[in-house]
Length: 146
Ligand code: DQA
Image 1 (cartoon, helix red, strand yellow):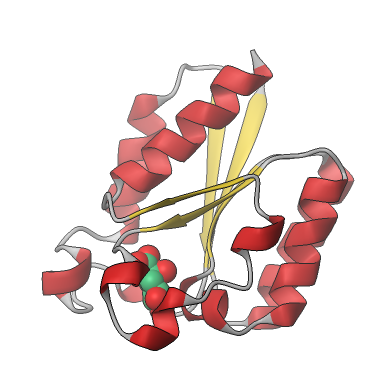
Image 2 (tube, protein in one colour):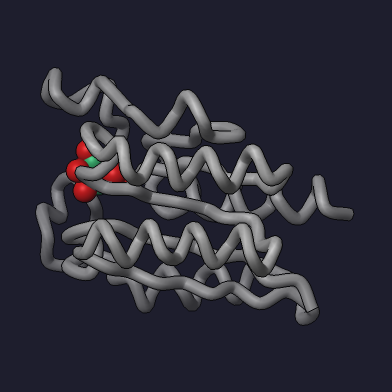
């Protein structure tokens, strides 16, 4: 069984009702179902969300220890969390993939969203494609593992 961790940062638990003009009207449970349906039976998608920076850091440590690749939507932490960046670097320096994803295109939004402190240590970045950003990231991880 291959597991892919899909980690989501603050306010993403509110998907569905949060700024639907920006993020769409589908929920995190819809995302979980969409991803589960897009992978073969021998792949487990473990999707989690937290509003807590420390918890997200601990999950990245856990990914290193269990040697699990990560799809990460750091949400607002993207723009300022050096703690999360350092934890993301632990993942990629361990030879695991960490793909940064965004539902919206932060570069087409407010100036503060144009900076990502995570991208420099990520394997790659996919943004602006709605839930497809996640699907393509999972797909890439599975292709590279094959
Ligand atoms: C986001 C973009 C971030 O700027 C924002 O803070 C989010 C969501 C996205 O998926 O588009 O919470 O990461």
